[in-house]
Amino acid sequence: MALVSALFEILQRPSIADVLMELMLFLTPLWIAVFVGVLVGWSWRPKWANINRGCVGDSPPSPASSSGQPLPTPFGSIPSLNSLKLQLPTCISWIADRTFTKETTSASSNSNSDCSLSQLEREKSGLVTEGDLVHLCRLVEENDAGPAWIQMMDRSTPNMSYKAWRRDPETGPPQYRSRTVYEDATPEMLRDFFWDDEFRLKWDDMLIHAEILEKCPTTGNMVVRWVRKFPLFCSDREYIIGRRIWESGQTYYCVTKGVPCSYVPQCNKPRRVDLYYSSWCIRAVESKRGDGQLTACEVLLFHHEDMGFSWEIAKLGVRQGMWGAVKKIDAGLRAYQRERASGAPLSQCASMAQIKTKVSADYLRSLEGTKTSTSEVETLDSSEKPLGRNIPKFLVVGGAIALVCSLDQGLLTKAVIFGVARRLAKIGKSL
Image (cartoon, rainbow, N blue to C red):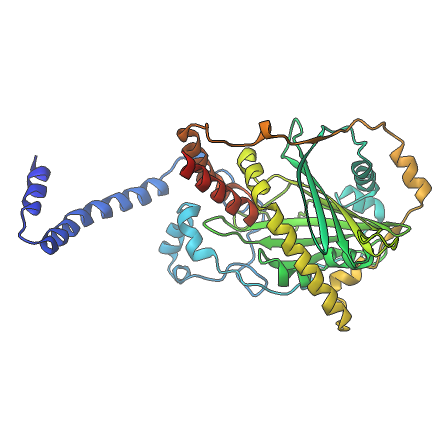
């Protein structure tokens, strides 16, 4: 009753300014109490709440430096405040920690490898092997015995045509397949473009750090480390990627996938993405101009990764933002062509793309014939549209809440984030 009477007394002030001033003085202690309660409650949270927080490796993460690690914050000089900051939820502490800046690809002297391990030891360590080539070939020929592909998109520009499919395996994240045909491009140019991390930093505004951890000048096998940033309050994501190129005639099979790396400790920030697969088949094709010349280049991409995010919401976002991402890649390719035409020297990653393992066409045909084709291609019809006008409003609200709560649990591209936001906004207006 005392609070009610005090509030009633405030509302009886003669002017609105006095009422607002008194309300601010009245509510400030309450907000302070709530904030302190949240901090104290989080500091004394149970042990199960600490799962997946902090470094997983035996050694602590290296201190902040110019290699792309977070820079020190003003709290770092006060131990008590620093320990308190580290205990805050990610949605609060991201403000002080997101100080990454873009930097060029570098190869540190203490982490690079010159293929000192034998090939057998490298295969056992989880790097890209011939088995990955077999898997990519089966994906290209659609005889990997996977579920049916569902067509998502078919769009084009004067310089490019694009088609995309998706399928949902019984276990694991959604898988995507796309076919892009670039006019006036060669397979060698596309191969170098996708491998060139130094140039990727110029057109991919999500990539903020890239470095070579291992390289083999004999096979071209590489291990690279990426750190990518995301908008809103998503934490940065770290990738340890193994990659290698095979050549058969004028066709290039480029495999990249997540690999283990014991000497790079797994930390909470940036969060490690373990399940990652993104591979290309690049080859020359006839131009759509119909002149019979092989002046265009076809890129078959197969991609999936475990983003630690709600897969249904992620599929919705990918569908909405995919075309914008594809156009950005095309713009990056054209800029890369102009830079190469100007006589710019090859970067270290692009130089490694020149090292590939050659295989014969007969060997690839033997791989293709190991299994019969069981994969189908379906077209997404109107009955499978993710959302419609009849969806209950509580599902839209629940989806938005799930999105916010899970944004910090995995890697999410800008296409996913902004695509989900745009679709939810349109649905909200129609309800």
